[in-house]
Image (cartoon, rainbow, N blue to C red; front, top):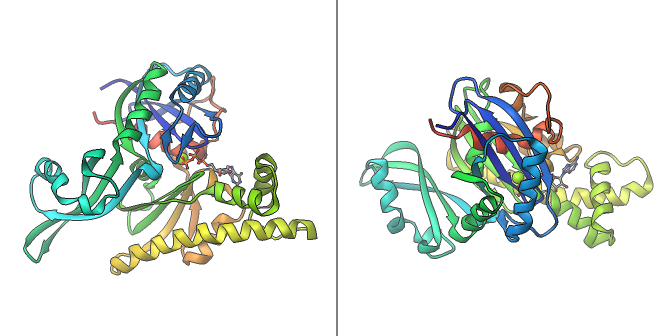
Length: 347
Ligand SMILES: Nc1ncnc2c1ncn2[C@@H]1O[C@H](COP(=O)(O)OP(=O)(O)OP(=O)(O)O)[C@@H](O)[C@H]1O
Ligand SMILES: [Mg+2]
């Protein structure tokens, strides 16, 4: 195992990296972290579209952060991956994984041959025809994985493994203090929102909701004909708080309408989880991701779900760098995913 590894989160709007010492040990420690903003269009819904643009951003990220290794764990998320519940006849895990292509075509929007498949067991049950393993099927579009790996390699990095972003969310966020009950871990990004329900830190259920913070910015652009920069500033300023002037009232209504859709999708996802597992309801929500910083989003989510909502404190559980190059370059709450990716390294 390498002594340090970098978790690399290629988001729609930003690339972020966290270098971790002892990633698989009992006391992992963040050595460095940094973030670099991407130009519009370089990444779309989790897939690198412009390999050379992203590669340059990654080179810039390495020099800004001063990372000492080129070994990375890459995350795949957004619209190019999906997760579904799947029950299969009980068998050794290697055998289950080998047989996936024969079980899952009807669950996929693309031919099996275009997808990379994986299976994460959650529990064992007695089905109608004998024992079954219930778990999560994860599928990623091969082309999307290839282009993200290519971007990293063009930047001179060495992708050691590719992980599923929702699992990184759960690794980083499933907090030690909540060891009982189900926790919904929600990462609100630019164009997608990862919803993971974890129990004792183990993901039980995953959905990627195709909405995020940019939907609200886009609503400003479409409804009020604002340019994207002004729309972004207005969104951050107003959020979901009560408007202070009549002018702000107009903006507040736009935010409200767009946020209601996003909140409704999250609530429906959690309701679906609860309706299929009434014996194990979700008990709390933990938020991360840039989109979750919309002012008042936590209170609004608490209202629509009826659950307590808090923000992630993942980074307070791992040692943070005291100071150093790049240490302030990323807001701690934004690097949860990169942290979770690095934490997933196997010894
Ligand atoms: N202070 C803030 N208030 C409101 N929204 C914010 C704030 N800061 C960031 N955002 C929003 O967060 C979103 C970006 O979130 P994040 O950086 O987590 O996305 P990403 O990881 O690049 O994208 P994705 O996960 O969808 O690939 C944007 O929509 C941005 O407008
Ligand atoms: Mg993201």
